[in-house]
Length: 398
Image (tube, rainbow, N blue to C red; front, side, top):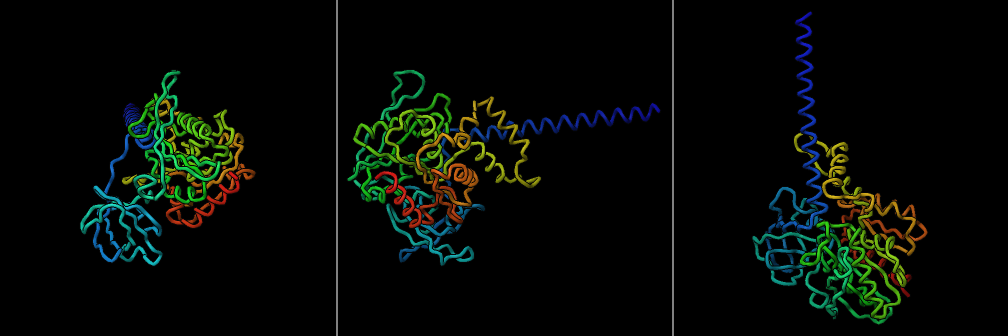
């Protein structure tokens, strides 16, 4: 009997140790993933450019690329128009639908700066254009400064640069780029919008590289940046704008949506275009967790871990996920919206756009593009994308 009791106590003691170790491992994983959330979703630090491809051949206006890492960007195999970046240079490439994954990736290539030589390390991005409206799109522009209050003090005015192009109408389009991006994100569609007669204003905002930062030191996903958009709208009104359409990419779509539900200065706002908008940061975090593969045990990150990590991030970093969930405030939206998203978006879950379109069919026109990723609509479906944008603008600003 005594022996059995001793064995039982030993077993219980071992079980406690095992459970304790499991709890410690779980808490360590939670802490680590909370740090990942900070670094990937909130931090203002820009990821360094990774040159994941190499030029294998160049000639006759074509270029052949080959991967140099195990998992390069999938854009090098996607049909469409893309930017090609290398150290000290930038070009533009087009992959035709005749190329398959089994064949060498041959890209029709247009040089913007220098021509890459064989062996040059490169990467493919979605911008397709770098520089400014004049140098890359042939659109005359003016550098302007927009002042916005950053922080709680009434004297904390900061200057935010913007590109202004003149149009023939009284209607304006204000472009808002995405997280960690810059004004060049708008260059893909800017020329077509400008040629249609619209004034355009491509803005910057707090937390952009080299500009004023939020007091938190983190991206706000519209929770704070909408104030800078409000300042841009005031600038446009002061310059004679009568009709203003807002155009946001990714987190820029969150900023536009936040402005629409928070600002009391919306006179003249006639519509909004949201391209792959981050309508719920929590949904985007969960979407990323589902795609994070665990190499040892297999599968994606378990939900209890990610849920606990979000709570830890709320305490450690002040992360307010409810404040950055614009789906919960869909009933407050009042202007017509053109909503565009690809159905294989690996950054923002497509169900968020579908939900907004279903919740507000009275104001939302939804364009879902097949086999298109995050903010890749113009790159992969240029004609469809441009036609949808120009038809929407024509219906809302004239």
